[in-house]
Amino acid sequence: MTPVKVNLNNQFITAINAYTESFLVDSDWTSVEEDCSLIRVLLSDLAQQIDSSPTKASLFSFTSDFSSQKMSQNSYSSQRKCSCGLVVKTLISSTTSNSGRRFFRCPRPDFSLCGYWEWEDQAFLEVAYLRNLESSLKDVKMEMDNSKIEVENLKIEMENLKIVVENLKIQVGHLSETVATLEASNDLVVEKVRTFQDKYHKIKYKVMISCFLFVGFLVALTTK
Image (cartoon, rainbow, N blue to C red; front, side, top):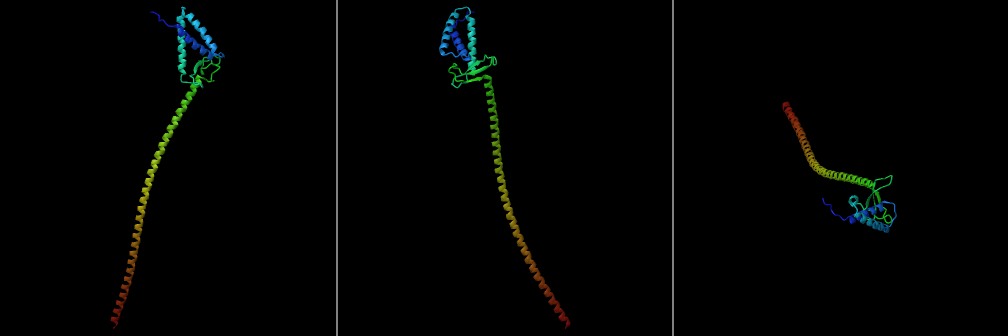
């Protein structure tokens, strides 16, 4: 199988430049941009010498792996930005207490960085907390919406009860009128009964007087 000819100089230089920037940011050096440029020139010369050596294939493999790792790190933190508005870098701590722990920081050199710095796992915890909080807020909003629906249903029931009460009031008014009519009729009946009783008593007295007169008349006739 014929090996593919690749331009090792450009790819190796790109990887070395990326490694230089990452190393300077991750270290405690206080170097300036002139030092970075000088290191890049020296490494470029070294890359040109290595390009013609038998070990260039293994070096190319190293630079490819390193470039892939850098791309993975950059894509991993592509959505996060520092106070400068730049996309942060995801680096790995080399300290004893936090060895291998990943963190975010401003991509600028030490002398001009904005001070942004955050552990990756801590950021994930904050994101998880915010997501849980957002979920809780959604639940609360859902409960509030359900409560509003219940309140609206209660309002509708109250309106229906008001209608029922109004109908009952109308019925009570009709019953009151009926009772008043019955009471008036009762009073009329009572008055008629009283009038009849008066007439009855008057007729009774007249009949009794007439009987007494008739008996007296008969007695008078028999005595003659």
